[in-house]
Every structure is written in C-alpha cells, then in structure tokens.
Length: 164
Image (cartoon, rainbow, N blue to C red; front, side, top):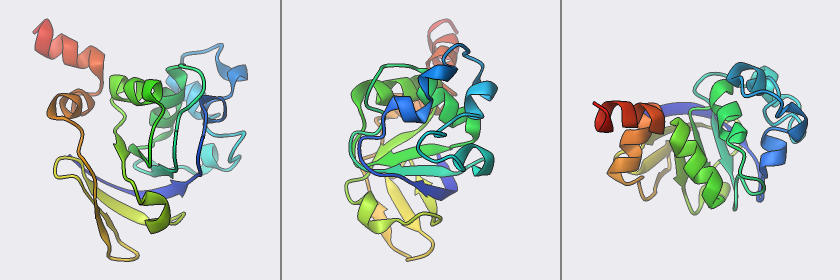
C-alpha cells in the first residue's frame, strides 16, 4: 500500500479533545465530524485539508479519551495516514479499526516540515520526503493489521474474512 500526501505537522500530546472537540460528539456522522477536525488546535485545518494529506506529530498522538470519533473525523476529512513518534494505544487501535493507517516513525519530527510531501510504502516500511530526498525507515504494521486497514477497517475485514 503506497500513499502520497502533503504534511500537516503538530507536536506532542495531541489529544482526542482537540482532534474532535467534545461539543461535536452528539453526532457520529463522519462528514459532520470532518468539518470540525482539529479546529481548536488549528482552525484552518478542516477548510484546507485535501484528500490524501498526512498528519505528522510527536509523541503520544491521540491521548485522552477513547472516542472513536477522533480517527473517524480525520479519515472523513481526507487524511490518508497519521505518522507520529508514538500513539496513545486506544487511538492506534481505533484508527486501525476504521481503516486509517497509523505509523510510528521515531525521527519524524526532525525530518519533516509543515507542507512537505511524503511518499509512504506501508508494506516495506519506507517514507520518502520529496523536499529533502531523504528516505526514512519505520517498522511496518504487522500483515494482519495492514490487511484490516487495506480493507477499510475491522467491520469489512470481519465481513470478508470471518463471515465470508
């Protein structure tokens, strides 16, 4: 699975309350959530994000509450993957469950700037920065998680692989 997108860069400890503020949790409509993604941290995000864009962040991305709305809002906004130094465990699992790729890259904060264009190969575990020409390696998702992501999430995986 290959992805190419423009970077939106954020720091450490981006919590689920800024990914999708609690005042919007009265809906689970992905399109409505997308309109408010990241608005308390970056008011320009929802109006400017383009399909295929990537989020790059520091440590502990997705910390806070366990709401599945957070990765849903990002995916519905057009984000094709989130790359971070580390993820809160429940956000990581919720993202995989809805088919949003999440990748841990130790030196991502030092190597990538806002607006860079990255090309990722999720299968081989490589990321190329078009601006710098630098290629970084990361540990790819295990094959079973990558399959869940490629199928669009856990529900579709179960429909195809378990219920078949």
